[in-house]
Length: 228
Image (cartoon, rainbow, N blue to C red):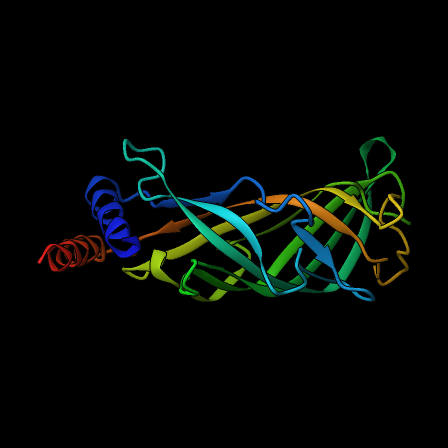
């Protein structure tokens, strides 16, 4: 059923638009745990279940902003980002912009464990705005795009036709330590106290030249095999 539904979406999207596909989730589906968390001692971020995965509803819009309908997938998000470079810059209004650069990966998997979307990236940037050099703000972004980052691996069922990932971003909100205070403990190297947050995700996949027709053909063949 999942393969047939995906084939129909890919065929419609490939035939209707070459602008690319949009993937996103609004928040996790687990009210008893956070979407994201840091590790206990460093500058690393993982899913809210400490690398085991968090349940999310992943939306896939094969013809971003086109007439097609987005399809939702019940999925499990696993992620690990490691940040190794840190800087803090004073900005207008007396605020401080905290910036980290790192690398990592994330995977969305369906109920059977098959990868829907798997991405590895270098030169990922995390930013957070606060009123102090000693604490992060209560929100942050983790982002990467093809102009400044690299994606050595992009795979999964949603990447048939070898599309190029041009960007992705995670938004983090309600970032707090276990005590409820703002994320502190920052030193000159940017190490922080453990924290958790809620969040969301979006990203863009753009087909490479010459693959749209192949994706359409493959999707149609998949639907024909299913009917037979």
